[in-house]
Length: 542
Image (tube, rainbow, N blue to C red; front, side, top):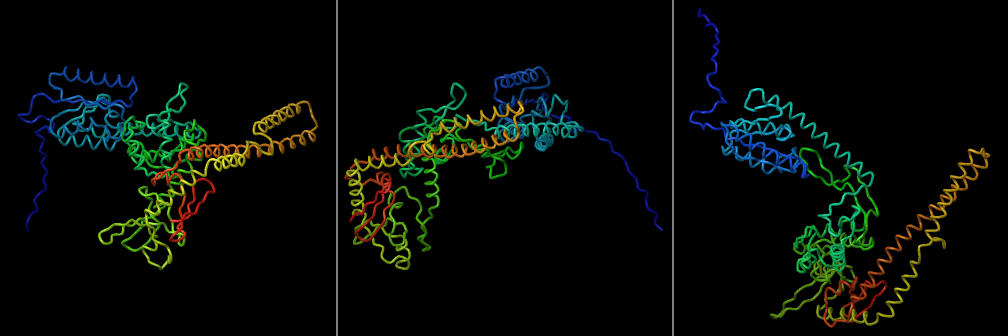
């Protein structure tokens, strides 16, 4: 019977130091230093320069070291490495074998994110590159380094998260208090006033008003962009190149009516620093009348309505044969204005080619796509005759205008009247409310003189009722005041609009957009033009 051999274990001691330099390796260690400060303040920038000088001297004083570079990032957070340009350059140099050791002040300067810190240290260690953290007295090439790094960087990350929470809390409290931050370098039209509050920059504000006016004139964002660049108008950053998004942001920014929405975006966490649009995940605050307005409210709201109208237009799907409402076109004014009197579908510009000759006509989109299925009698209109009829109508309107316009302005002014409620001005109502409040205070003082409770309660109740009624009247008056201000702004725009209109012999898309609200095709010989001027319509034969 075979005997089983006895199991034996022999210990073989290590004979090499994995961290020892290889034979033939260079004698001097190539040492780089990394330093970082958190903000751009003067004090921190001084610290940044001091760190660079300190590490340069420290490396040059060691006879076994040679300087492989000083890598420094300033004004950046330690929680994310993506934006730390020089840090990433240093790591790239390590991967290319140009650095043997990295010196840095502390783990918090290297990274406040435990995961990033460990991953970077492990990658460097695998390549034989050590990181020396002076404050914590850690050399990553030692065996105990990873445990210590995990411990200390965990503390640093917790500190970063705590700081982030404090910042978020501060922002939330500021938002609740209605404190409005202003980024003057990004907001065209405003500058910081002597009192620290925003004031209107006249030159920049005129650019903002121009953008609003041109949009309401029917111009597309592309056309506005081209006009601004052609006139070399500068942006808020003082450059003369405009983008669609910048123009759109100006047209939708409530700051231009003196208001401020706080909490539009939020940072998801202190590590990724990802900014997300606030769709209800966090609270918001809306501050009304926070600063001087550049754009009248009524004009701003009309721009929002026009923007919604344009974006709601749907594309015409010709190839599929499915007719939808026409997409907004700033190229031809009539694409937006000319509609079929029978089915209400917009008309479309079409080029006919017969016998080698081209003819431009306008046709109902429904009739074009479906024949007579939905629209039976919509006529095809010759563009030249259509343009001529429209221009003649505008000229007649302009020539008829002076007396009619002034009558209309007078009528409109009478319609909105003054800031009164029941013949009492808003100022008088507020004074009366103050008087009642003062009387209440006197009554409460009389409690100390042992006034009869029944009499006191009756008088207080009467005052409270009167006070409530006054507050309601004041609210009505304030609403009326806002309405009147909007009407006044509208009247100013109306005068400006009328002043722009003039008799022209040549058809102009721009003037049509300015003057006309809608053109209805009545039949093959007649169109009905509704002007933007309130209540004005005119039928014209082709």
